[in-house]
Image (spheres, rainbow, N blue to C red):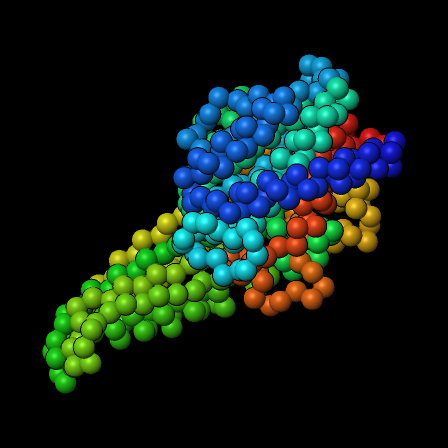
Length: 403
């Protein structure tokens, strides 16, 4: 049964492949930043309507939610949620293909155009098989993944999973480190919690030739930077993954003037909430005490970002087996946790699910062809694998994974 089903879906994915490529290129040529995805939203809505799928009333200003009702759905049947993000990044594209961004300073450099097109392709396949579905499929085209607080949490806050109660939620993300046609999965903590912090050091300015008459915020800032480096090596348990990086520092504008103020900013990444809380506490203590010891004042602002993305181990094992059925065992890989962040984590806090890497790379992948690069250029063969895989995975989870 599963072999027959996977063959049918592969045939359908191949039949609509050129159409999905066209959708991706259209979205890619017209990128829109977080919370501005109006054209993209209209394109998605129109395509779903043409498939006979009626989008739900808007829950946010941008983005689309739609339900595919299964012909064999009965009370108590499963509901599978499939999510794709749709926003672009604020950078100029430097590729030379014929569908480059037509919007200066905006580019789909994170593959969200690919994600949206793959979910549209899956919607096409699932709609053609709707009479056979043993439950319903919720399509989530989510805005604003790239800009905190993101689009996932506002959707949940607006009642998305209160109105629709999925049994499982599935997402995927382009990765150029994985070859097109393959996927990679990770059980448990997969992507990091990511928080931003901003430090302001206030001292007393003065002439650089008489530092004893000043309270030097530059010196204090240097000591703070050095002291912060001990947080990961001497505070976080050795078996835990964490990163604390101060990535910018600004202060002064003349070689002979000690400034009154220095500002710094950075990021903290952690793989569990206990370590995250510990880093927050110890960073505050370190900044305050170092500043006091050097006779200056320092303030710290921490902006909480996305939480740890935790893939449910049972669902991930099921998904791995299902991916193997569709792609072949040799094309399903295990991957390690990574320190980037994703607001799909909020969906996984609300519902069991998993988030995998969909390969977009090639064997001769160029080093600079990576996510968030102005020359990011994913292999479009991934659209074929991704569209069919999402559809097949939804059907298999609706059936409870039964053969």
